[in-house]
Length: 343
Image (cartoon, rainbow, N blue to C red; front, side):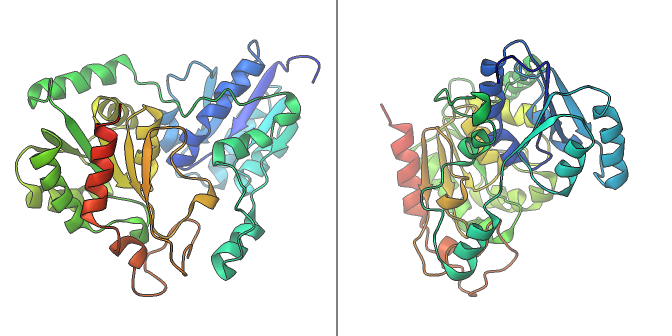
């Protein structure tokens, strides 16, 4: 493209991890088109992941509950904004509908649905050379001259969230102490490491590596975190369900290490450059969701049945759950220790 487009719309409605994985694309687009208006359309519940991003002009919201009437309302807003380019990195019905409603040149990321199905169903791996998701997003706009700058994910903590985090640190005596964050939840059951193992890991972390622990998660994961808190005992701050994205990001940025499953919080930890230990079960690297350009250790097991899903599921199809059950407490502790002692 010989001249800079006046207005660009990037579309990715969900979910949390996918939106964080889109932040390098936002930065790369801004570097390529420094004078353009760059907006981002996202589902309302995830707007906190993009608020404060200096590379965006405006965040356009798909209001909750995100049904077709909400989509039409968003389309009425976007069609009058004269976007010259739309970048669809979601590629589902809603994103295609929204992009079709505006008179813009559409650049779209093509999901490898068939190759992904082959890998899950028949274990035929045609994705072995596939790049991580942020670089797949970039493929959609390479023709525009957008290039990888070598950087990772981004999350911009607000001054208010930073202040609230400092108040928490002072309130619970965490100042000048080594704090670890544990996020035991995940959307799907098969992506959750055993809660008892998280609890035992937390105990041993406090004995050998860290001075305090913070349990993070959504409101739906509060009960899980409560159970783990009781089993660990003292020196644990359980704030599952009590943080928005901004406060969670501020907290993670101050932590020495993050331990968790393949989830949005793991990507948030990467986005604020906190070393991460991430446990992968039913999904694999080929899907593109491993930690991106952050100091991280991924724990997984090579099994005949992996991957059994590209997003996770409620129950193990093989009824043994070895992909998670075989990950040991010692492995997680060793990974954490390696990250904490990295020079």
